Length: 145
Image (cartoon, rainbow, N blue to C red; front, side, top):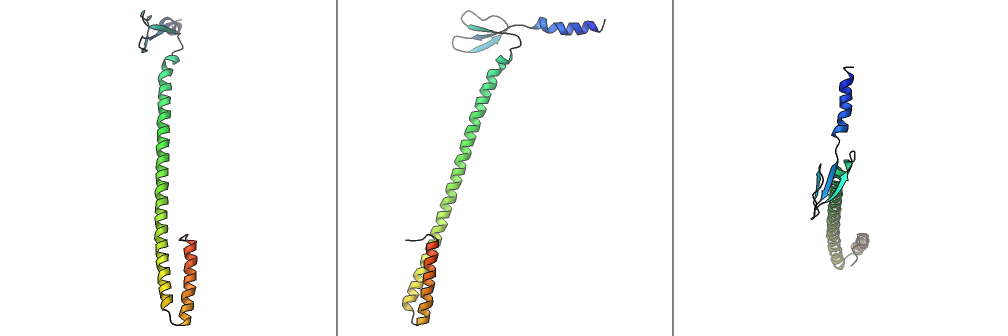
């Protein structure tokens, strides 16, 4: 019997301590929660015992919205950085292609000058072959101008 009394005490205490919670909304829209009824100029909403999750749900929903916004902002920044990197890479590729075209065109001009100065038919044939090869290289490198 002596063991049963503390058990009964602890089972009955929550029923006695259970109280109503009043959600009060002021004239300017501010919210407050209290254990006594709201003043006359406030709107009230009584929350039943066991529904305290309603009280704590609002901050969690707000936090969830803020987290979603932060994730969206992070994703947008990451996308912008990726686009910037892709643009920089493309610009470097275009610059390298221009340099390659400039080198090939300079080599072609050198071969053309040598061709005009060539005296033997064998040398002329070799230079013409190299010029044809150079034209193919220019075409492959998309350096047509």
